[in-house]
Image (cartoon, rainbow, N blue to C red; front, side, top):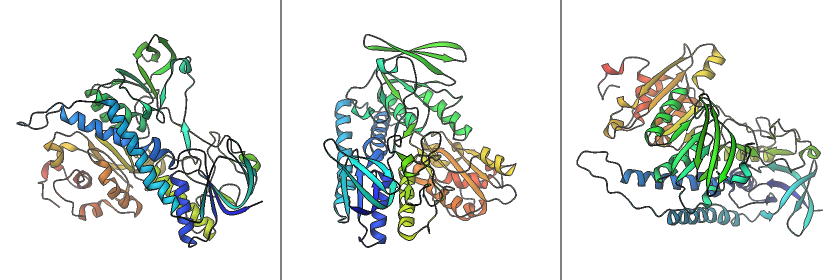
Length: 473
């Protein structure tokens, strides 16, 4: 029976990052087997970050072509060929997968790729099954990086009506006149706004009292209002209890605080979270523990309850499911697989972005989390009306900084702003390195930029912004 130094189950961000890091640390001497049951690259490049941001950017350009932002500049309404757009999107995804995953993997001679389904047979053994063959191998170390899949809510009639998930929606060739979106999280909001901007009437139903429930409430409420201004219908504290179809038209019965509501739709998108792909791995025989939802339990080194097996990526429970975070976990796991536990995973300063327009950028602790930990919180909120760059296009949004009481240490930065994704990493550096409000103020910022919102918010701890000129440091 063949023995590999490292078996990686999964070929997404975490798996690739681990394979590359382990290869680099050992100068390519480590024998690595990568087992994949899906397309190389996993969620991000195939059905996540890449296609969603492509659609979002296309929808933004279409929206801007029909929107007058400046006096004297008249919009010229663009034409939309949705099928052509989606074909271009799929071609772009294929090119990115080929360039960033298929070609990259081919450059590592010590990494062998096998297509199939892997299950554990013991604490250091797996069986790999494909459509027509099966074989067993042993490993010195293994990494579980099998990712996740969209969750399906238990709603009467959901299978009969038919639906798209955040994985399958990229197969759309025609734009629905009316879209029912179930779920008010990040991915659903991104796709929902894009479809709304392209011309579909989107109705969003969220079971909780606000969209983005893990985000600061000021940001959540303002974003909801801005989405509604663009025409999206948002129903919070709503629960879809039954689905039916009348010919080509779907019908949803929604329980709300005001009673029953009927929503008619032509297509339905389920964006109700994700489920780890761990249920078929036979983890019990491998001595690998999971939590109640099926996520693999790991320590700060990414090691599981079996010292020979590590885990990383979306199959590990955390606040955010991010490609960047999965890759970092894969790197940490690989470093520990090679050097026996010298690297640690740090989740305190992970920047995350919701790519709506405006974008939500967040890093560190929220006000509620700080209050729960320290019993008090010092924070400031500044609207984008104080930011010169934002006023040029009448952009709406805000910045919020949360600091440790009595010290001024920055514990969290949260923004709702155009291009938030381009400057939230600046805030991550402040949080990661324990910087203070004074450090933000002492850092010269380019003027006029949206990023100035972070500095203005820091200055709001010291003085009213109405008593500041643009050039005050």
